[in-house]
Structure formats: structure tokens, C-alpha cells
Length: 223
Image 1 (tube, rainbow, N blue to C red):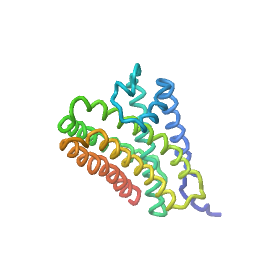
Image 2: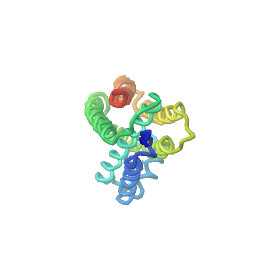
Image 3: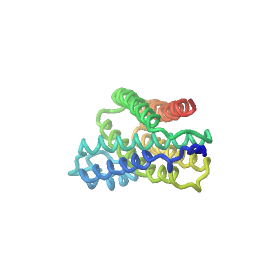
Image 4: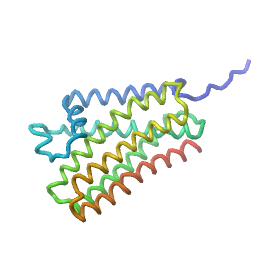
């Protein structure tokens, strides 16, 4: 009797569960290195202070910082993967494809970071460059921590419709972009250079990378 092909889903691909478990392990390692980092990240959402007022007697552990950035990239890449599959209505969950999406996200993020650093040192007063960096980093951490359980739901909760999966992932990115815009305006809107920086970063260097990753993901999965 001929065996019917198994439809590729997060349930039928063991690597999906192991990957999400690995991402969770990264978060646990980062938390162990710097237990106060998560609380500090969420507190920063409601502050617009400089580094001295927000992080008194607290230094970021660079190792934990790198791990959290990797966690953010891996989580966002999985969210992009599930959204594109939901949009197409079909697709094969392949670890190789996911790996390519992660590499694309990493490459685009590196380019974006370099361009944002150039823009910051060009249009932002030196005294506020570090403040921007800390706010952006902690917002990235918050977004990743919010996004991770949402991605888990999208992968393993079969009751979610494709439209709901897409809307949930878009909502997370919208939250990030909206918060970046608000924080940037509160910090920099008092000067013309600050206004130019906001236009360059939020409208281009923040939005376009997300669109680029999703577009590349679409091409990979569709082909």
C-alpha cells in the first residue's frame, strides 16, 4: 500500500520545536548572565532618560547583549517564516530555508546598524548617541520577548487562522516601529538635525529592513 505524503507543518518537523527550545535556552543563558536585564528593558519602555538616570550602577554584559540580539534575529526570522507560509497557504518547513532567512536577517541588520550609526553620529548630538543606543537595544529585547510566545502560538496552536498569524506578527513589528518613533521624537524633535535623523531611521532604516526580510523569505519559500 503506497504511503501518503506527510504535509509539512510545525508538528511534523522536529527541528521547529528544537529550534524554539534553543532560542528559549539563549534567553535563559542571557538572563543568567544579567538577571536584571529583562526588568530593565521593560522599564525603559516608559522612560526617556539618559544613560546616567536609567542605568545607575548597571553595566550591560556584552555577552548577554550579543545573545539577546541573536535571540531577536532568530525569533523574528521564525515569525517571518510562519507569516509567509500562512500568506501562501502552503509551504515546506525546512531548516535550510529557515537558516537562510536567519542569515538574510543578520546581514540586513548589520547593514542597517552601520547606516544608523553613521546617521546618528551625523545628525545626533554626541551626548545623546549612547542614550539612543540603550533605548534601541532595550526596545529590541522587549520586542523579542513579546514576539517569542506569539511565534510559539503561530507555530503550534492549530486554531489560529492564516490571517490571525499574519496580523499577530505584523502587530509586533508595528509596536516596535511605533515605539521607536515615539522615543525618537521625544529625544530628538527639538532640532532640525534630530527631525532629519527621525526621517532617515524610522521611515527608511527601520521599516525597509523588515520589508526586505519578508520579501526575501517569500522568494525562498515560494520557490
